[in-house]
Image 1 (cartoon, rainbow, N blue to C red):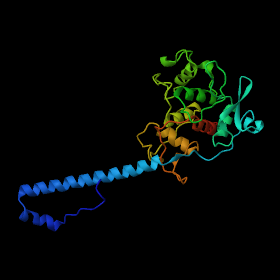
Image 2: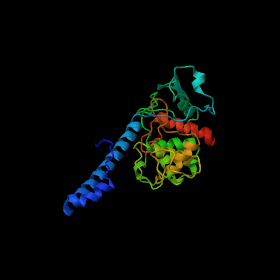
Image 3: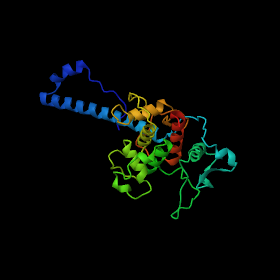
Image 4: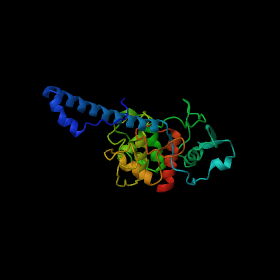
Length: 283
């Protein structure tokens, strides 16, 4: 990479060039100058991009600071007095051993559990494992289920079979069918891979669509990586305006201006997004 230097050829030098060099040599010299200028410009752009990438890669995710979480059925987090968040699964209270009450995401997982939106993982026999998997990426089909339940969608009004043949006969078929029926963009054409991790832009868009939040006009200037040509910019900027998300911060807690629309979202982050959406957009 070239150092940041400025190369100047004065007008006086240009006037003297014809007398010093032949026409062909002059043409070659000017071509070399143009090529050098282009290479310098490209190297500067490359350096700027590298600096932006380093800022992004060194950042940590920050969602808006806490709103008071209130659950419709009362909080097991406060009632149980245990070290871990607990959920009610078919009448049985199950502690989630990977969601300590001291973790930042515990209150949001508890809120989701109290609303009967999540229960945690089960084994092959259907027995609760006592695990939520906060660091696991949320999948497209999990996102459909969470959004359908959180928004209180009347599943009886959804088609009995989804367009997406990949989920026929699976646990997520009804939720995917509802998402398709309601026109949520991720699911609308019935071609999405249900088991792949959902992307951040997809999670925000789906959650806002589930709660019938109309997208506000977008400027493409709120986040450095959400341009004015990105289709999901309306949902992302609306969610940011509503305090549902705020993007990434650096190690000092300063916002970097990056949102990461194509990053995966883990289950802890999803719990927070949905919990805040429930508080912001109503039951």
